[in-house]
Length: 193
Image (cartoon, rainbow, N blue to C red; front, side):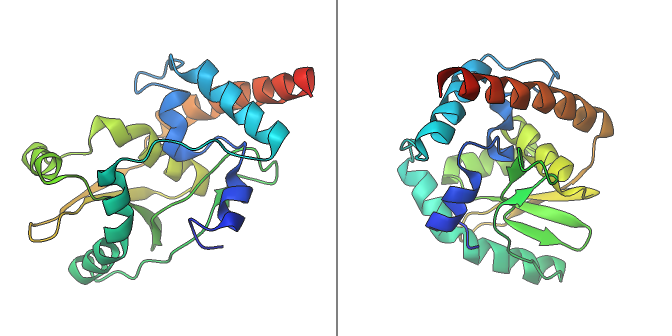
């Protein structure tokens, strides 16, 4: 399925997704303060079969529009083809997943197309922004991949491409938190259905 289509939205509705794993676990491997609200939102999605509109800034909309150009730039720079995918599940339980911006060899790709100022900030820092730690490691956890490239892209400026190696300790902590989260999610849905 193509990301952004109704099929894709239906596949991920009510399912914890790597892009939201920061709402479940912190980088310190503690439960997130946003956990309960996210749990309730997913329970509501499962019960109603619909998703509430979530905020999308102008920068986010622009980022989605530039993603194809960024993916082509990544392929050109690295020489690696990028396989586009839909929503990928962790296993046959179908209770957690991710939507990678691409799969690359035995790794993957997360693309961000931030504002000019934020892109400059990322270039100067030269590392994976903390805001995307759970998403990048969550995608490796879901897919079983060994590494993930984070790319920040802004037209007319050099891109930032950072190779992130799999952190097994974080993946184990994430697995435990997701197991608890998914059990609670099932219990909430059962209690109010």
